[in-house]
Length: 146
Image (tube, rainbow, N blue to C red; front, side):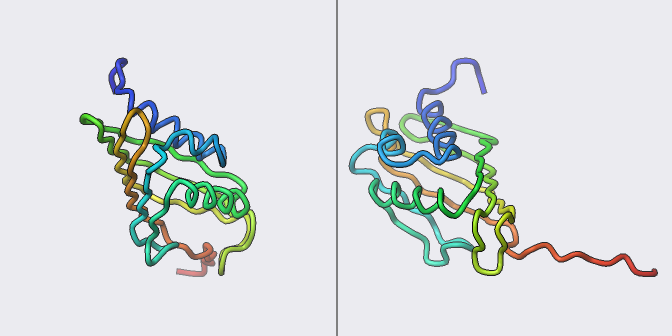
């Protein structure tokens, strides 16, 4: 990216860093326009997807904080045109508690395409396409004779 980065990309990256740091409540809501919606398309964790408003996003952040001991969002690529930002992101999270068949301490990874629309410098709409890597505990393979 150039040294003169688009201001909406700056906001999108700061928002993802805040989520990495488990921002909740007003700290998280500050990135969003009051009428914002977040549309998470169907994926391995949410087969029916989700549509959330700002209050729902803040509640989901609290749930994430309880279920994960760590997470990070690595913005691999970002493009902006007008009030639209497209991000390619690698998310990594470590479970704090067992989730289904996954033990506490399991590492999850998702390759994410996120499309954000801005109004007045705030996120008014976000669509996420989250592609999770296999959600099964690693199985050790014995190296028997060949």
